[in-house]
Length: 277
Length: 269
Image (cartoon, rainbow over all chains, first blue to last red):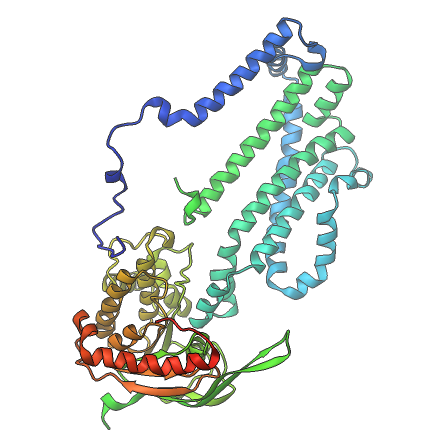
């Protein structure tokens, strides 16, 4: 088995029985997931229809669908989407553009790390959402304050994970590079950077979560537009349907961004065994 | 001057101490090592576990500085890693984010000695030499242990080193693969005309591969004895059962056992 005859590709296909799997076997995972979701929605709808629960509190799938449809039809949802989307894109991009290079520098130069670490550690440990009143005082209730709070939420997980990635380099790899007479610059480019990629991506994923929280809470606290604002206002007016529409859209944004990150991860981590296929 | 008898590696009175920052004690690892390896020779080093064999090899590679004495390769004093030596690590330590071909050309890339096309060409030649044709674009996790060790060896050989240093390269392989790889190593080294220093725990492996076997003492390591392997240069598996082979094996085993007894350490057979 071990002796590698170059002609023998892994004979995986030959081991399995040739019989094709049924449609159900191939798609069991997502079929089961979809069915449980559907069942949940049906029970919810029926519970409202048979007046077992009060739709004022719980709304119902059909009411949410109608509310959502109306908001898209009359165009009232678009400004909210645009504002929240802009806040997210600006804040998160800024966090990446500043966080990743800064993290790399802090991870590589221990003096830079020593100088900045107290600030990073303190801010990383605290819930940055608590800075919201200050941020609003500084930036007002427009777009800028939300971009700032999204940025503050996202940058620290990105920064801390990038630093950790740069600092936890497998000693064996360093030894190999040194044995091949690698210069400092080469050590950085060929060992430190590539081995920090997994941690960096973890940082992006954590940062994403914080960014979404930043949008919602930021807009609830002080804003005139956006999905968080929509949720807050609709909630205050007991418009449960609209609240739910806002929640679903925020969740969709989160899912979409997570999927995008996952695609990037797959691109970068083709070499990792657990990211295959 | 006879070129064949020129020493490739000369080690003179080399001692090495490790200073432990935490315990603030220094530990003698190597003690007055004297050794010569001739061009084209394969010298094996055996000795009790933890006696400093790996440290010695790292010192020859230039990764660790010696405390006293000197190491010369082709007469040049060793002070840092250089292109005249290449180290094959015990754990294959392949970069998981590089393909087989990219791992093999790593050293060449660092020295930017060759253009991309030439590098690719050279990689292909060495991939063929170690019998991995068809696996150029595989990632290390897609290979078996034996295959990864081949890449590890090719990564060192591709540098065309004067001296190849192998640190228990087959330690993590199963018995069958190991014997197979011993043959392969002999074939590869003969083709590459390399001089090599080979560390192992397995005495039969040391005898099988080498022209001479150096037995290290328990720490601090001294050279207890250097034993010439007076077997025909073309080795075969049956030789491992011939009286002369077994005799050498027992002789080396006794030497190590004496050392092991001193430290209370049981060594691998």
